[in-house]
Image 1 (tube, rainbow, N blue to C red):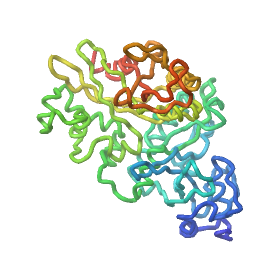
Image 2: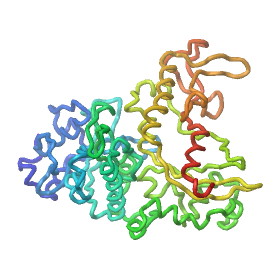
Image 3: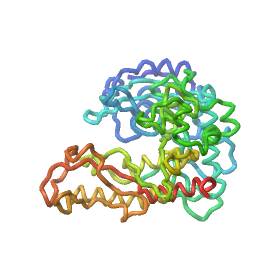
Image 4: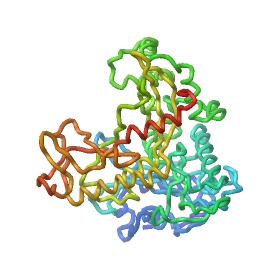
Amino acid sequence: MKYTFKKAEDLTLNEVQEIGKKIINKTFREINPEGEIDSKGGFGHFIEKHVFNLEANSISAPDFSTAKTELKVTPVRKNKNGSYSAKERLVLNIINYHEELNKTFYTSSFWMKNSVLYVFFYLYQPDISKMDFVLLKDLLIEFKKLQNDLTIIKRDWETIHKKIVDGKAHEISEADTMYLAACTKGVSSESLRTQPNSPIDAKQRAYSLKASYMTRLFNRDPLHKDLDLLVDGIELEKLGFEDTIVSRLSKYMYKSRKSLIKEFNLDSSIKNINEILISRMLGLKNTRVSKTDEFQKANIVPKTIRLEENNKIREHMSFDTFKFTEIIEESWEDSTLKEYFESTKFMFALFKKKGNDYYFMGVRFWNMPPYDIDFDLKSVWEKTVGLIKFGKIIEKEDKRTYNFFPKPKENRVAHVRPHGKNKHDVYDLPTPDQLTGRKSFTKQSFWLNNSYILNVVKTLFHDVLD
């Protein structure tokens, strides 16, 4: 059935929402049992066609011209703890590097098409038909009413735009920015297009809102004033988010960890004491920095690094475990590992050892360069997946088990090592191990090499370490 017989371009914003409310808690099949969802973008086309009488198009204007509103449909997952999270980034419009060159934020293709978004969220369930997915929620996102978000998004756009102007579109990374990103878009990341001011072709990209940002919006009313904001609008306008955080924490530089623990009246045995110290230094009393609105929306991960007196880093940096049966179903282009490092920014808090204590040396923000992702990280992932697929995991066993997974000396950036509670903490293998016939193996994860992190730290903190 059709939900409106009025032309979509003539609908007012109120009329768009009135129609949209009618399909919440319905499945796509209930909306139109004769409809089809034939591609990843098919969910949006389905709603456009069967609810709003919109035909698929690639015009630069919003879908609803009178309402000046763009329609988007995006999936969420239900987590084990009952919460919801965005399954993926919300992809907006393709970036034409040449056309964007002389634009300002308010004349950019992003703003002209996406300043007001009407978003439908559906529940993704891998074991049922797409037609039986349920529409959980509709959300009107008017960026002009989200002042802090708009300030950050404007700075994000300016970061992307500067690389285009500088002839560095080929160096764009999703993790360059906080909320608004430029994600790869096309058949593969090898889909290239020319760029101004450079002979180097750049990957085709589209403006997108990060999955972490969409998760936050789904779970909170975007018009609600968050109580756990780190930075106010004045600070954002003056310095930007990252420089504000660095500036605030600078007054604690060179203080010992023991003195900071005493200053904030903390128990030194508390788990994650370093992150709690950073939170207290930023004025947070009831929440951790990783749980604040900006860190959640921007997918910024705080990491504490301890630099020893000999200027070495002992520990490699660990990440979540991967399931053997799931990683072999991925391609590199849509892999969890690639997406994580493309979209994640890290806040490194450095503590340097002197005598019997560690001294706070400040914080820096960092994201992995595209080259390191596309070459070094990719090679570690490909070798790991190949070993799992062919069941070639265990090399030998005596008092301990040796495996073929990539080691720190084999790759400049990363390696694979155990990350379970003990040797009995295992995941199932898709193919039994060739040597032992085992059908499960100790949980593993990707780790960044301590030598790689050390080089990053020396670059980021050169001004305080020299």
